[in-house]
Length: 401
Image (cartoon, rainbow, N blue to C red; front, side, top):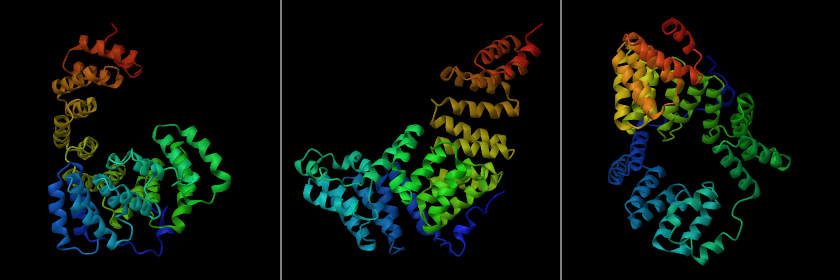
């Protein structure tokens, strides 16, 4: 397994192992906020603040919970507390809070402070933020945006990121080429180039660009995340898991990193590690469909098919309209030879997704094992008609006399 692709970047760098307790508080608080459990967020952050000092992220998270409850006074205090710990970190939150209260001038002053800082948010994020809805039709708001707040390069890179998000890689590449002459040494341009390269299947070029960026900005979370994604795409899941571990060990409070690392561990056959990460993720986000699916597939590959069925059944209970959930459980029943249950779940999946040739094929095989060859032959014919060439051999074996 190739795990050394970033060694030259991290050599001589001491990885800060963040105390687990602060990270636990932050991850739990984010999950509560995600589910709209603002009182629980406030409780867990307030508890954490009695034990942990000097972490501005605690105040930012609690402030967002206060905003969720429309408690503007307490939100403002917490954003200001974050500012006092890390300059400008609370400016955007203060701007949002003042906008909600109708203070146009105050909101715009703090928004400008944010745009002049290292915490600068994108234009798209500002314009789509519902917190500004109360003031967005005011003359002050319109006047504010008459002045260019973003450079031409920032605007074009934002266009590139949007085009990539909707699958327009060629359009993104065209914009990138137009920026090349004046921006070839600009870090943000190099990052955009790495994004485009990865979208076009050029993983090695993406990695090369990121190595250059990380050589001068070793702890940049955005660069590291893309590096891990590129490594995984390139088939170096072991290297990707190490990169995700490096990000986690820096104290980044994002549970999705656990899910992404679990994917890497699952790919390298490190099922125990994968299950540990995915269990930790599910403790925070118990209804997440992708995580439940990964958990089921991980334990299944470890040989515990009954446990896999438990995860898939749990996923179905939460997402009964997702045909993939039925297919996952049907596949586990198929492996265990529980043919009746397999047929039932495949049938449910086909009710929702009738054009899936693989599902028709496996339902046919399950029917053969139930002794229902006539029904099976119908399914094999449908599978073949939808493009599954494997169905031909089953038709030849069971259906052609």
